Length: 95
Image 1 (cartoon, rainbow, N blue to C red):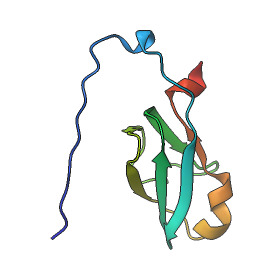
Image 2 (tube, rainbow, N blue to C red):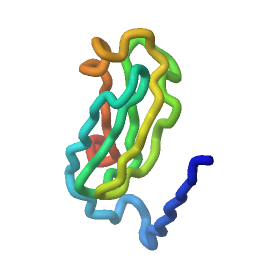
Image 3 (cartoon, rainbow, N blue to C red):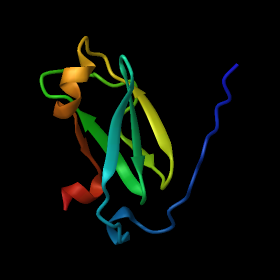
């Protein structure tokens, strides 16, 4: 039986007052229809997009903590060739 670990953190100021660093989010294919996302800094509100698809990801719009590995299932028949088209954005890309 897999172990599910949940992490919660609390932000005590409004989002607009956070001084979030620009982040680089790593993405790599780890299975036929699976990707792994990682980052070295807090990535707030990570959003995934695969142009031309709707609801292509098993998980979307989440926070990614430094050193955390997030595994996401991708609903596509050809992930190997489509992985370069996946767009990964976070809150800091909005400003």
